[in-house]
Length: 137
Ligand SMILES: [Zn+2]
Image 1 (spheres, protein in one colour):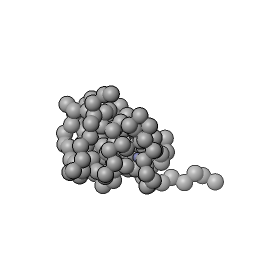
Image 2: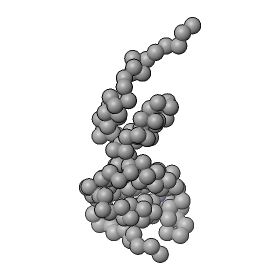
Image 3: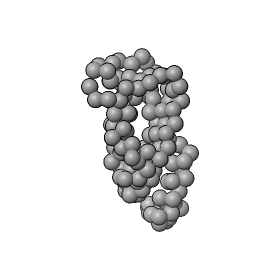
Image 4: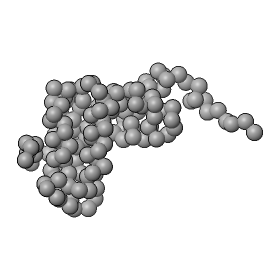
């Protein structure tokens, strides 16, 4: 029995990269979901820094925050993803979007992101009545 060949597998890397960029504009989870499909897609994702340039800062869990040293311990995945995105986006301009009501979840991400303010192409905050202290303690 011969392995089946999906029609998408015949597309060149450049075309797949362009398609990934379209998906990037539609979903903030796009790079993570695309990079786990197969080795080829992961390689293309890692070679496409533009799909790693969107940063959504906010609480990513439903339970109350468990705060240790002013940092939410439940947001560790979000923090590691933020650091990976900062690397994978290379020197590309980034978009920062702050949402949600929980500064303890976002403090570590904001500390990482403020190190790259020269790359900030856009900044949006949907947290109008709170401020985030991003200075190192
Ligand atoms: Zn939290």
